[in-house]
Image (cartoon, rainbow, N blue to C red):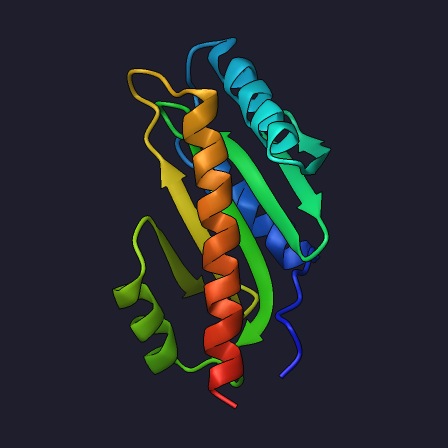
Length: 154
């Protein structure tokens, strides 16, 4: 099986925007500071950063494209990777097995039918650059594990 492709499609953008828009209304300025920290963490981890909106950036490097966003009442941080895996190429059973064997993140089928890896960081009380860099590294590991699991399914 070929490596899992990371996609950026309209359903993905809509899902990220909807996810981050739900329940917003945090204190002015806090969101900007956290998204700047997310951007800086991507850069420190060796990713090229592409802003998408005031509260979403994409970190890219060969084989990995991760969305990072700030949202919710506490302005928590979420990282997401949208893949080209679907229910026809990666069953619910394999998805459940994946979720039961990993820590920190989860995989689910998004609104467009694609498998989505997501990791959320509760930032109540603050968040450090090291926390976010670690989250980015975890996302890359989860992506590789999902690719391995998908390849093993063949």
